[in-house]
Image 1 (cartoon, helix red, strand yellow):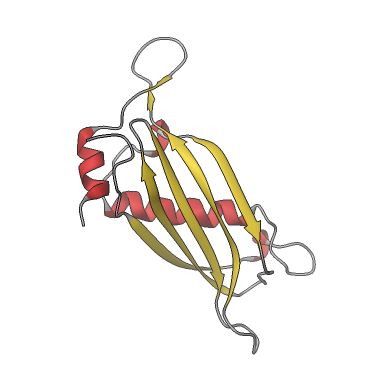
Image 2 (cartoon, helix red, strand yellow):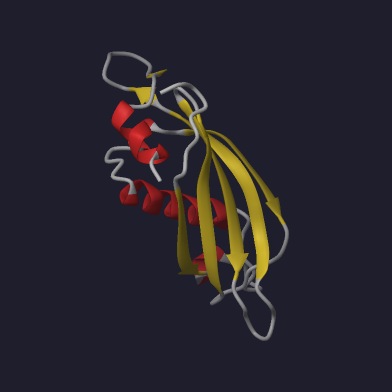
Length: 143
């Protein structure tokens, strides 16, 4: 598989903003977005059978644009999609949507992108980047 393979993998996860996710006014902390995105990413890796993904795929870049508040008790839908699959890195795009809540319409609360890198942790010393396993590439690029 060549670098920058076209990936078709995406997943959406429905959840709820809990009290621990908010400040005293019941408005979500910006850091909650990372938790929501990683939960959706975990769903994607489970659906695609990428066992052992998280210990070897740290984030090396994460950027987010925050557009609207989310509130305690509000349902949210988080979607992650692989937008680029390189030899040893992978770029994801994400959106976090607040569902209808207290007579307010559904709204996009945040969107952005992040990059993970595959690490070879088998040898002694510091891990180094390594190509994604061929089986994972196949599972991420099939329709």
